[in-house]
Image 1 (cartoon, rainbow, N blue to C red):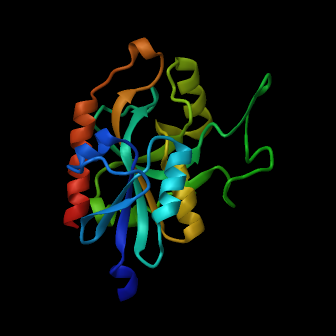
Image 2 (cartoon, rainbow, N blue to C red; image 1 turned 180 degrees about the horizontal axis):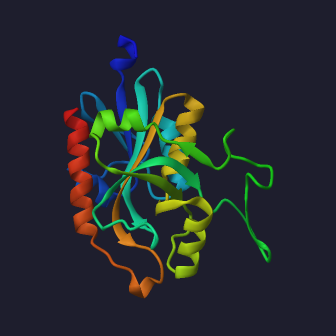
Image 3 (cartoon, rainbow, N blue to C red; image 1 turned 90 degrees about the vertical axis):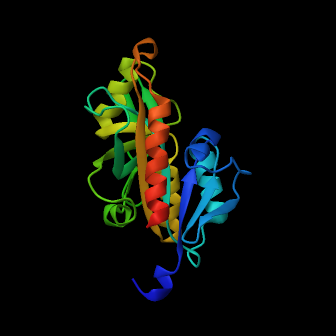
Length: 223
């Protein structure tokens, strides 16, 4: 990278007020960048794909930002083997439920000829860039971006099966799509707060996940 690029700051996209507070930031007006440190800006987007894409698109500027990180908590799929509190860096972020459910099964937008990106339903994460900011040693895997979370075993198994994802959240691929159009780095980092599957059997430790998320943010700010 040249010096001009090195001087640009990282934009961190955070969905909810609870996740903002985990990073010792006061919940902010949505879609407005705040400066958390000299090299780190934060935008609170609101929850979900539309909010995430809109909020990031409004503030992301390649003249000021080297890249954007979608940072938050997520739900682990039963087959992932992930423990609650584990941090996952996205190898790719996948639009997991943009498509059509038919009697013969699910078909994605890409399969119907409406791919959201030139590479299909997935946006690759810039792992080297992410690890330069938060360090190595985290789990690496596919993150599913969903509009409806998996509160049944059938849905969790179906999404994990067709995407290869280990965890799901509601914003990452949308943030990545904006980053790709703008031409900056993209990463998604999720801390597991719960298991997916049948709702009454899910395991949760949101306070632990938020503490781990805050620690990751602190590391990012220090770097």
